[in-house]
Amino acid sequence: MATTPEGAVKKKVVAILKKYKCYYFYPMTHGYGKSGVADIIVCHRGRFIAIECKADATKKMTALQIKNAQDVIAEDGTFLLIHKDNIHILEETLNATV
Image 1 (cartoon, rainbow, N blue to C red):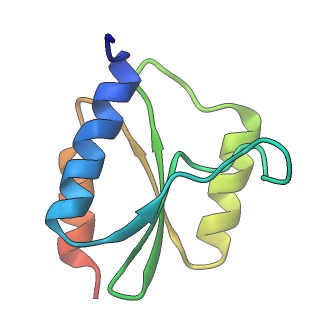
Image 2 (cartoon, rainbow, N blue to C red):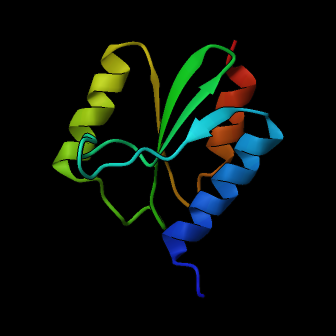
């Protein structure tokens, strides 16, 4: 089965999270889940990180995704919008997490 461009980014993100031994999961957004939640939720060294993956920089977040990102940031969490051209930001963030 072919991987979508966004799926390829998610695969790279998960490889990095495994390298850093992060706790992570993909939240379910149907049924009892909350819509607009980031693609991957991470805990690393006591820090909450929400990661939204997009194929590239031209792909935009929905209004609901933006609202959820703002909510994470308002609670002193970290929100990352990761795409194929800025995936290095994830490792920089994990290295900076104290």
